[in-house]
Amino acid sequence: MPRLSSIAAQSLQQQILDGTLPAGSALPGQRQLAATLGISRAALREAVSTLEALGLLRSQPGKGVFVSAGETRDGTAIAASVFGGLQATPREMFQFRAIVEPPAAALAASTGSDEAVAQLAATQAAMEAALHAQDLVAASEADLAFHLGIAALSGNPMLSAVIRSMEAPIAYSLRLPFADIESVWAPAEEHRAVLRAIQARDAAAAEAAMGHHIERAAARVGLAFDMPVTEPRILSHKGPVFSTGAST
Image (cartoon, rainbow, N blue to C red; front, top):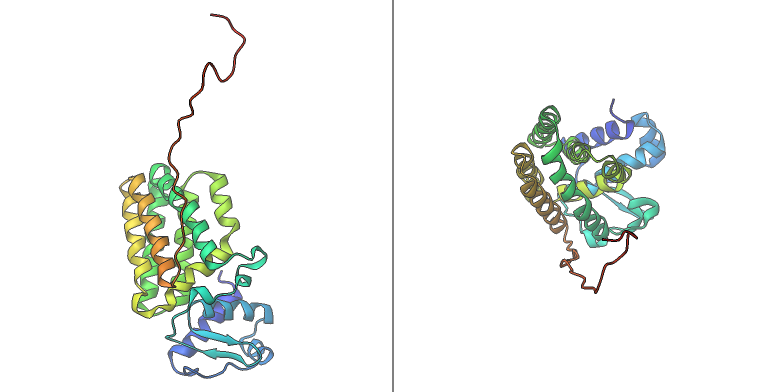
């Protein structure tokens, strides 16, 4: 069942699309808008946060919330507070994802059941249908479901739990690239490459495709991050590292 905040975000998005809330207009006050939508102010704040990340709304401290459809978000200007108590920057969030999600995709290609992979394909189809309908709220929700689905497909409960524990900040980071209208289809196209690799049971290709997707998603909001490059080290030593106590 959809959350109230999601329903509210859908309602506000539709009003923006049909011109009821034209670009540049201010939203009604928080109390009035929450009453009109029949939700709590907390749920309204979550809905507004979703639409801000998608580039449909813009908050101006002390002035209110304004419709900003078509304005690309600048990832470097996003406050760390959107990621909650972590105080992580968007760059750090994308870097975290680039560390944990590509290996999850590789595992998904290796261990995911045919039924689970088919469900992942259905999630991808739902995302593309939402994009065709210009429904960025639903597209971003399907986007999140796709990434969480891959985490579950990894077959590693610890890896899946780590990714799921970061669901809210990951969801926010997934919404940010949708604000770039000119490349709004890019996430779906990159998903297809990940999905094809998982369907082909090609772990290396799945890992590479997911890494490329996260890197490109960050670039679409003007972010770049460094990934540590490690070389395997061979430690030389004289004699055994430890002794079993057994004689030969």
